[in-house]
Length: 412
Image (cartoon, rainbow, N blue to C red; front, side, top):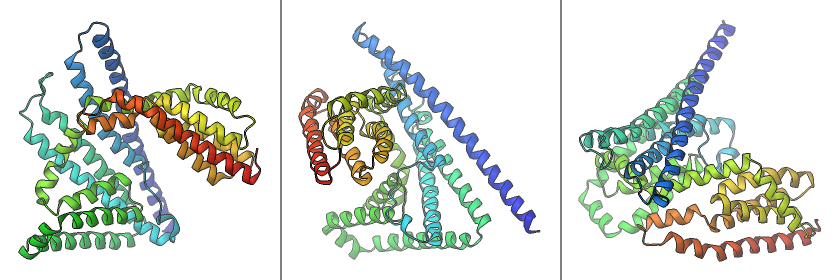
């Protein structure tokens, strides 16, 4: 009987894995195809603008909407693969039982996030279904339906993982019930307190202080629980806005606000910076840069650290992404440093800190984001010109620290 139960559980796990694999592959094919189409549209737009002096409004609008679909569906793919960024501040230092409960809490929060996205996406789509886009004349609600798709995928896959976990460990069902009950009690309790005139007056007089503590304490709580950073930021922001805005209005407009925030032609530079970094890494440019950097810092103490810094500065300036630089260069330097008995924590610090220098040396995605946030008031060209000196100062500063540390521990 025990063997039969084990067989059933293994079959259920395989079915879950097969379904997740199918969904993951489908999303990957769609996103890669979408990115390829966007690449062709970018080339067309550049030629039309700078060669024929006749930019296409249709391709620009299509690129903006494609970027939103790429980003939102990419979020769903990250949740399927469990590759969303989080900081294991506490979860890696507790026993297995506590870790399992924390992971269940995170899955529960991901289901709630998917539900919020689905609800907000439905409200936004229904509201704007009759509104047509300026150029292509397609329903705006149809474009915003990506939030419904992504929300259903996130909530569905995470809920399915929870069900599978409860089937294997029935006690987790009690823990999940406890999470649900606590969250419902906290919601209604806070709604009741918020409706009191005395609290409303106190909140009005101390809104900055209360919002500050609500935002940062809730975000710290999610970080300690090992929740995805993006999810922690989303819920801490929702909790803070809930102090002043009705919950139903807040959730119903969340997707619409997120859509308008992402609807910017300038943001197109960001995924293509990352794509350029990956292409250069796969094409071997990262290795050639490291060879060149090793020639520069060959006789300097801590030569591998100096090589890492110089290569990060050059690769980061080409890709415009600190993550792409640290991943590409660090992935090659780290095994070499380990083989030569370099101090690995310090090697990691060198790689992380020097990658920022490359991010500041143009072209830089951070400057483009800053310009978009300021509504275009900050010139991207001026920011690019202003980034050279700070980027070089950061790189040289890290090189100096690495040199002093290498001399101290007598490493070559």
